[in-house]
Image 1 (cartoon, one colour):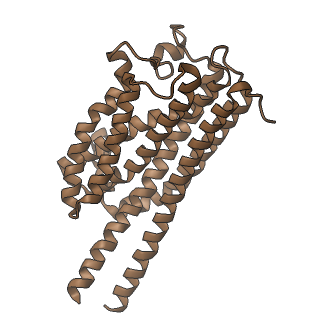
Image 2 (cartoon, chains in turn yellow, orange; image 1 turned 60 degrees about the vertical axis):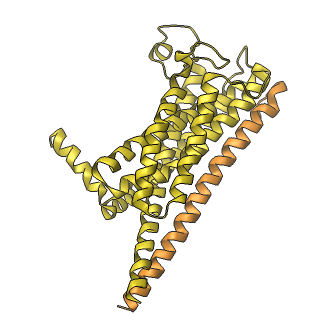
Image 3 (spheres, rainbow over the protein chains, first blue to last red; image 1 turned 120 degrees about the vertical axis):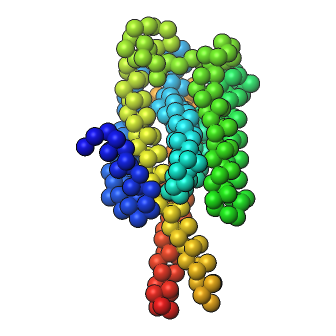
Length: 257
Length: 52
């Protein structure tokens, strides 16, 4: 099958029935593998890695903080992609997938902010600083809240999908900014990228490089969070599709008397 | 066996408790709402089939 044909086959999932049938089939894999990766990664990191010479045992927070922060940003980027699909091709499943992902993004952002604050207190001597990365993450969190509120506030689902898609486009600036804020403004308390940087991982540079002792369990946790995100979004999108169907059936019932 | 977390024990344990608690809440609420909506849909579909 050519790449173009494969890309075209992807649009079949815009059909809610096809999406539900496929997601029901693959979801058990995502649930089981995500929980397995997270449990093994956390147990490995918590029980079997040494304390850091500078940060002591607080280094163990990395196994939750980094995967959650990565997913907070990537969840918004996934919402951006599905919102663009809605705006261009008007596929309802894509709009519902964006809606389904938003609460997952809220929780991921909240975990990143909470663990960051708890970690920052003993390391920086403060729970919070108006640092570029922290501030852009807080704004991203507020965008998530605004996005969910906008969906809830508008009665007509197509209008809600249109407006939330536009909000998603605007918020993408902060999603990208929260990833690269440290590079744009070389100031603040938060360190630069030390995990998802090719040179840091391959050992080509030594500056702020995460040691392999911490990196492997961290990688497992990141994979686990990605799989959990996919499982949750598939499940929640199915729920949104069914909720939309219930609404349509009730409306039809009212019309028929 | 619990590792010795030293003077940062509270910091580490609070981070884990908060994160795992939030993830558990998200999963539980998602599944609970999913089940509720699925049951509601089946009920409405059955009623509509009965009433033609």
